[in-house]
Length: 471
Image 1 (cartoon, rainbow, N blue to C red):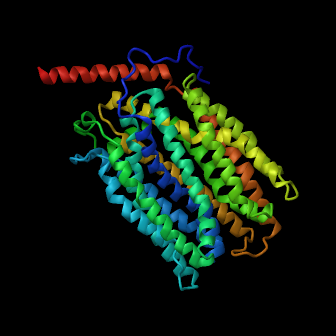
Image 2: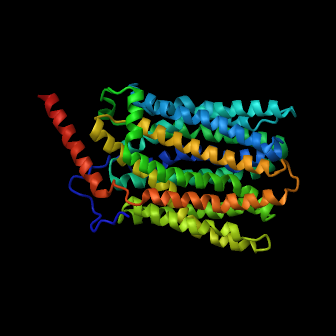
């Protein structure tokens, strides 16, 4: 396990941060992940496991296939989108113009996902929802990959990247709140298929607008864009996948995100069919995600005095223990028991998504030192590709298992074996992946000191290039 530095203060060679990186711009930057996570969370928490099965009436295995196909198409386009943004040399930048190109398509396709279809054919519903889901996912890719690729460009320092990611994570958590609110908003708008369709329109508008603000609040570094790219996409992808530190970080992140995806997909079924208190789901999510939001400043402060991998290991271990509570919880327990325990689980949950995205910037710097190229786009693209594919397959397999065990679409009573599977998939399944993520984090090589050395070498190299150019 990486040891905390004795002196966490910046080294003399640490990069000077851009004065534009203030809390106001970081707050607006976080709005981008608010929209991204509203989409992703509403798909996993409400859309696939509840709307498609209980409102639209699609069989669970077909509902899982809708997400599997849509997210797979989305995932495979992420690396390509990353490389496209790396190669762009537009006047407005490599990343930011895509915020204007993808916002409206995202809002429109998201609204269409919740449409009240005048058909009952399982095949026709499956084809419609799969097509729209795929189009929505492509619009989201157009926005999210360039957006995430901006992080290591806007913030250069070890701790500055953690700080920027705290704001991004805050936006992400507020996005979960919005996703949890989708069902109550749909009910307030009349409930049933019509209410969900109306809520889809409202949320579609809410998802498109923030990208205009993100566009004007962000910036790019001309010196990064001025470098010519000499590697083909194939060669660049090969180098990315051969990058040992990136593979280690990806293992950490994938296992943590699969845990998140399983919990997100199963929790509403857990509250509905095991605890028998479906109405408590939204309250529990509000308490839980509110606690995650409150824990973020703690982890930011803690990480300033330790290695990021150390923070990740501690938080993941705490979440691992807490996740097993879902296995022993009983329907006759007081609702307050689960609610009171939620902040404890949230303490660990808060760090699992925060640290890997903060650590990816250091991986990009390490690659820059080796290759001479700034390839934030392709790294973020592959990071998202693997994350989406792994999470989608996990949820698909979970829903397929429920279908094989006789899960009944709609509001029917579930067989005992399906309910037992929901308990295990909500508790033990995520815990196994959390344990795996810890094994990847132990001995992580890109420490604070190593990153300071890399940044010093990069700045010396760039200074030498500038001197040679002026000469």
